[in-house]
Length: 310
Image 1 (tube, rainbow, N blue to C red):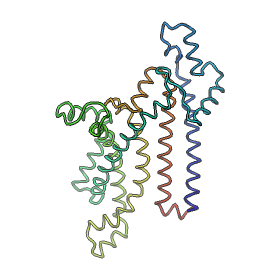
Image 2: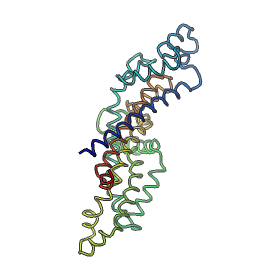
Image 3: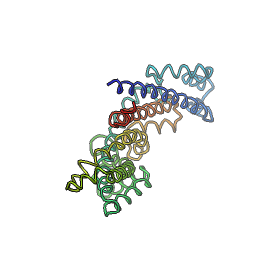
């Protein structure tokens, strides 16, 4: 128990430092973008008073160190400011859209595991076999094809031609099937390689040969002996992949017109709505940091070598 508490405290401290660095990077990069965001939002023919008003709302009329301190102070209490376009609270806007994006990411995560686990295990159990060749081709294609292009292909095939699924929106479960496939296939290609390599390595261990010598069948050898140890690397990698899925949902939401965080952020980028862009970057960093924290904790819990070294 003391090891788990110590691990959690150390990883949590590292997560806080990571978020602080991410917030600083977002602050610097947003203000390093050429051009005056206030002038862009106000419009070409806006009077100087209107531009000055928007600068005051953004806080860009203050010294840089005051902007930075105010930015960090707002993050601590969850205050991301107001949208320059809609005038609404950015936190409220993100809170209304984040569940949609999380739902899409979790659905894609389930799809990726449902494909990667059986395909990776079957490929690793018999290297060079038919299933292994199919898994290799699938991994190559899944990694090579971008998620947004996969989404377009799925839309054309199953929504336009076959009309099995709706084209756009997020009103029902059927609206999430194609976006989840578009996101999950690319992630499953990566996970399939990891599972395949881990299972192949475990199948060459002496304890597997001993189990075979005792007369255990091949299925029992794979499931009862090799599978448990081979899934240890997958646990940590899969947790990090969930963070990637949250980031990858940005483009896929645009393709399928899903009213999630991704589509909201892209619109904000086009409109130079800086409070929204900054808040979305921090939320993304937070999600990825939490996923990494979970991965580290799971690795510490499931890996006996780490516990022994501690």
